[in-house]
Length: 351
Image (tube, rainbow, N blue to C red; front, side, top):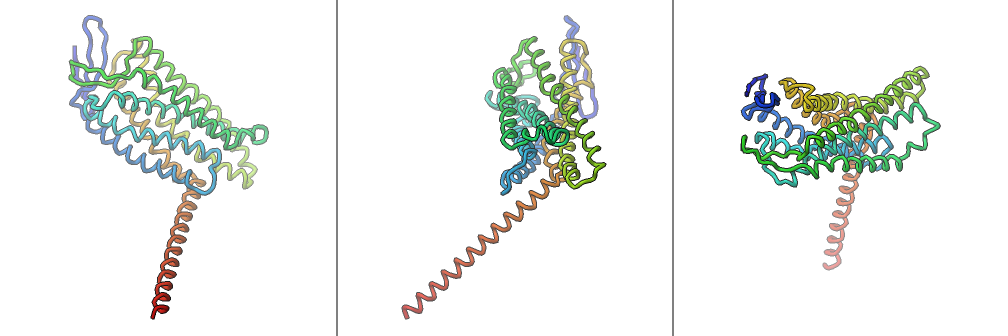
């Protein structure tokens, strides 16, 4: 039994199998989702590449070494850049009605990079939260932990764990031809139990554990900031300015990624037949994925708008480049004048 439901621009087929009485939802191939979302993804990709490259240039090309929080933020920008560079492949996949036109290697690599980004991004935020927690709540007893060496070590650990987290996509993603719809899908070749374990582990490791740590640190940070503001010293005000950006990035991440992980949880409940196929579930699944992608563009915007230290670094970098160009122009002018003078002297000597 097939029921077609039109919900705004999204046309969805609710299919019920008469022999097992099970139901599942699929997006109809004529739905506008295959036109709207690919364009949205391409816009996100272009903006994300431009903004995150700019952020990395400010952090990495500045003459001053990055502080601990800036090391974490530059790593976060690197993870976002990796994501948006691979999103155009996914946009083309959606535009073709989930018909994969590329190689099986890209079928493995693109979802692996997206999974790695989701994992690394939230754990870089965990490191940022812990750094702010140590700086504001335990500034004396745990100050040794806040060194660039430990920050780089922490980032290396997160990248390594992110690679491990992406391994299932590299191993189990395969191309499958579906004769019913005449498309080649890029999907995981999981058994029922493997799929269930994978989804549950993703929810626990990528959502419950990190969000719990972030929530604890954030509550203690806000409490410490309130106590420090009553003193009103310059040091406390500087700490508050440094923390405002972190809190803004944390809030943006939660707004963009919490719906995605809630959707994953609902998918698991539907997979084990606790929930039945519902149009709202599929719409929530689609919207939450693309809201999560938007976080890769939102982060660098927050650095520019909220980050006072980032703004200062960007201005200093522009001044640094301007000074280099001026010095290069001056050297070129001096060299040109000397060349002309030598040429004139050479003429005088040979008259």
